[in-house]
Amino acid sequence: MLPTIFANIILADEINRAPAKVQSALLEAMQERQVTIGDKTFPLPSPFLVMATQNPIEQEGTYPLPEAQVDRFMLKVTITYPTKDEEIAIMKKMTTRESVPIVKVLTADKINQIKEIVDQIFVDEKLYDYVANIVFATRNPADFGLKELAPLIEYGASPRASICMIKAAKAYALLQGRGYVTPQDIKSIGHSILRHRVMISYEAEAEEKTSDDLLMKVFDKIDVP
Image (cartoon, rainbow, N blue to C red):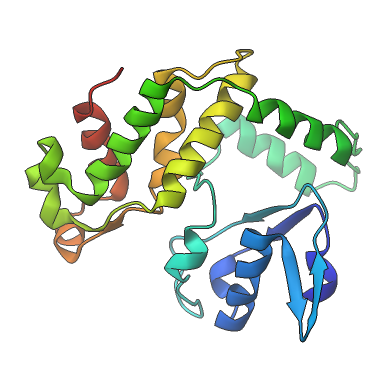
């Protein structure tokens, strides 16, 4: 793992198949952007991004991901089956010897410049309050008129969820060509930020409820500024 971690983008394919020691080794890299070996610390390049895949169906030979590690992933995006046209395109690409040209579209320096622009995107004070209410509603749903969710949520979202929601909303606003965040930006990225941070209870599993089901009620209930 050591030689491969010093890259701008790390792809951990089927991360839940990695042993616990490998998963825990990623914690420092993902949070501190550095790797410590003995008494020496090595900084990671900038930008540094970890992407991971996880097969939700086959669980044999897998290891559960620690909550601390899951919390360090900004987004969890669910990917469904491809469309028929997409599947045909995949078949054509994977059953021929035709090489797919790789075209560079961005440099590392350019990405760092974009990150600086994202930091400057304006967020109104009311939106900070809106995000806080959403996150707090996952921790204390009864306080927000969501008493029925209390037995269905084992653990609510962490403070890292609030930080990531603002950062992601800023980036989303920039992609829409705006220099300010709207409530819809927060709604658009909200589920991807929270679905892996809200731990559902056994009761919710028994009722075949997912974190997305519960989050839908949270977003519907919290007043939009």
